[in-house]
Length: 387
Image (cartoon, rainbow, N blue to C red; front, side):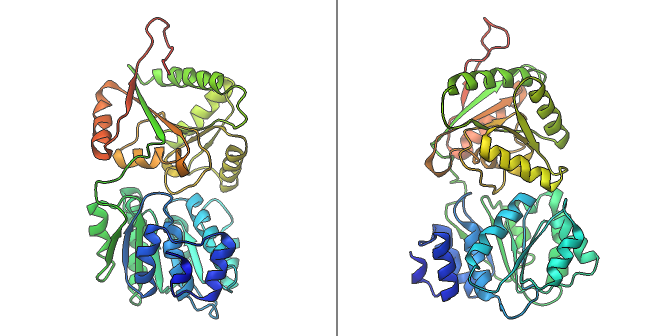
């Protein structure tokens, strides 16, 4: 439906029009009315389906722009996603007096305090830095609390921080909660209900019906040893460069590794071997992360990252995703390769695994009803791969 068919304020409609949004997506159509009416929501929809506006529009509508106090908190797992969410909401709130501040680590703490003290209504934050502010005296009693990428936020790495924040906020007055994600496992629903009263569960697809876009061509290589990974990667990169020679559009290859240390080491090795590469991980300073992303978007070639980049981040025209280290589970696989083949464009996903890990490929194929083609080492030339 059109946004003009929904009871939205003139300021929000004007902001949507200015930002180029005229019609709702499926998740927006299903979520907007319950959220506008104050209901708690657990919402599931695929990456790129418009979840940010699905919760962003009701937040803007329910905020009193005449009060310079925090009325909504949005919690995301990564700095990049926090920044992206904040920017999208700010576009729609352009013709209001609503102010948004993004709160994450790696940048000046005092500057964030100063911005909050000037009067803001929306805080978009990562869990760790939000806790820092709360422990140093930040008082918040928001009307609305949103958890973006909720399945990731309830993982062991985030759960303790998220639970601390939600219990602290929930203990003050009844609030409206919205938990959103591309995948919402039963465990996430169970944990979410601890904080919500009679939530509405909304999904734009049936459980187990997640699909990998047909625009993504998928391959996997079985390697004899972990040490073979670098050799396999170099051979693939050489072949891609040869095939791409003369093409006006740059190669944009996103390489996923398991650890922060691994991102740095692989990037250093690739640069030494003549392949221009940058890396992004959670221990990199924010300015450096932003510069690496900007350079990758502008010039392409290689960006090495941990799963910090597999959730919600929209990078245009990624041509290839390479799982240098295998994803931890089938959902992580979906999130990683979803960085390519977006908006109907073609993409390629390549995964390196050891012989004992081939069961993961079978599980992915079964869950998503997809086929991942096996590629083999060319025995005639040691180290060369048929790609």
